[in-house]
Image (tube, rainbow, N blue to C red; front, top):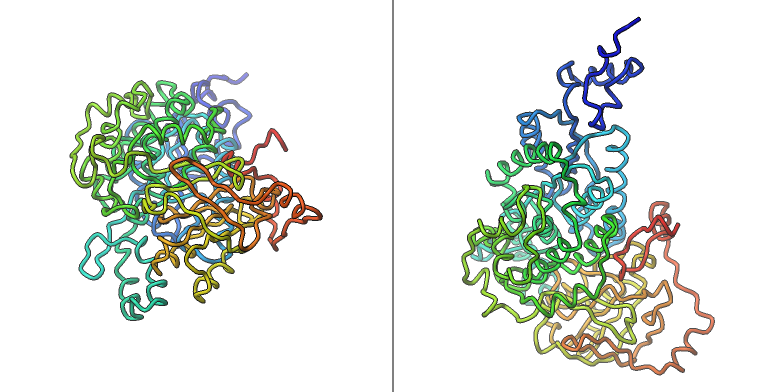
Amino acid sequence: MYDKKAFEFKDTKYRSSILTNGLGKSGERALLYATGMDEEDIKKPFVAVIGSFSEMVPGHNHLREIADYVKQGIIEAGGVPRQSETIAICDGLCQGHEGMRYPLPSRDLIADSVEMVVEAHHFDAMVCIAGCDKIIPGMLMAAARLDIPTVIVTGGPMLPGNVNGNPLFCSCELREFPGRVEAGTCTVDEIKEAEKNTLPTSGSCAHLGTANSMCMLTEALGMSLPGAGTAPAVSNKRKRIAKASGRAVMQLLKDGITPRKILTREAFLNGITAAMATGSSTNLVLHLMAIAHEAGVELELGDFDRISRNVPFVCNLLPSGKYPIVSLDANGGVLGVLKTVSYAIEKNCQTVSEKTIGELMDEATVIHGDVIKTKENPQKPEGGIAVLYGSLAPKGAVVKQSGVDPSMYRFTGKARVFDSMEDADTAISADTVKPGTVIVIRYEGPKGGPGMREMLSTTSLIMGRGMDKDCALVTDGRFSGATHGPCIGHISPEAAAGGPIAFVEDGDEISIDIPNRSLELHVSEEELAKRKEGWIPLQKPMKAALKKYASMVSSADTGAIIDVDKL
């Protein structure tokens, strides 16, 4: 008779013990030995290090080095790290073409891929490493779904470029150069030179686009260590945070602290507060709602607008302001912003540091000046995002009001309707869109796109041509974090679902009133009823992955989630 204890390598409280313990797991242990483990390793907790390295994506091409530092921290704290990679799509590379149909669907694919690796191999804890728009929320969704001890390590912002003597130049301004070339205010040589100097390092684009909005949000939610939201990608601070994150996840495992103990409703409200105070991307609305859904937390569009009314926009950051993210890091970072609006923060929320967000705020230093304004003298008195409702958007629409010139807070114009972003771009480039126009781009929503493309090429043409004070844009698609100007997205219901935007015609009058949160289509109910007779939604060609996504995805007003309970 054999000694059963000879095969009990690991405490059964660890999930990975199912791979290591028992006579019958001889084959599993042999496979682990094949990876370079020894018998002492098999006794230790197994920690998944889920990276998203990509040679194609500047925000991710440094993440293998970051992963090495994470693994050092795990080993120092007594764990066995095992690295895997998921996919990463660069939204910037996808702008203005059909490729932009894929980034948002990739968010859910990333969450599923993390679930599959972690559940199949019974990891005890995980560290997720990501740097850009949809990859970070996908990993946060996975963390909330799996609910094992997790730390998120974000890749951090790149340094700003130096163009035409401006050392704070970011790609959000470069996006406007094509419109300037067409308008004759920028030469071909100038744009070519700017392209080579705008993005000088690895990291997420240097302004407050969606990528850095998500990095900062992750820290505000408590899922990354202090400083992780803004530390430059190429800094030694970023490497120290990575190593400390490896140690931190082992402490979370020891103490039994999992994401759902951190991702409470109060933490999500803190995240919204941070987004409003910083002027973050409107994409955060989609992502926060999707993460909350995975965490089993109720979150609604109304939460965003209520907090926006109460929290001022205090950060002078590009694209709505003057400075890149590295300037925010030097003046107090995420905790400095939270400290500035501390009256609106729930301070008892737990974080992966095992300190409360209030304790971290107490330890933080904030420098109030031109980068972080005081709440008494903010950039603008309300938060960065507003939610509009009305006959054109019965279930809501979203605008980055921090990036809108006050002269356009209220605007009424005649509709010019397009069924795709490309058609709108062609019309703008051909100078056929006149002052007083509300550009309507539809069939770009989660189902109709499918994939809810960003309209950055369109908004860049508008801004580059100086049309942002006499034209507005409304769409059931979405916008890049680099977008500013009178641009209203996420219109729900979308055209493909039979929302009112599907029945707008050229010449219809549309009114935008941001202060009063309204978006109205001035067409009678009787006329709309006539237009709906015999309506068939536009169907766009799509490949298999997008067909699956379009068949399952929900409306933007619920976060464009895939609700498996309703399948």
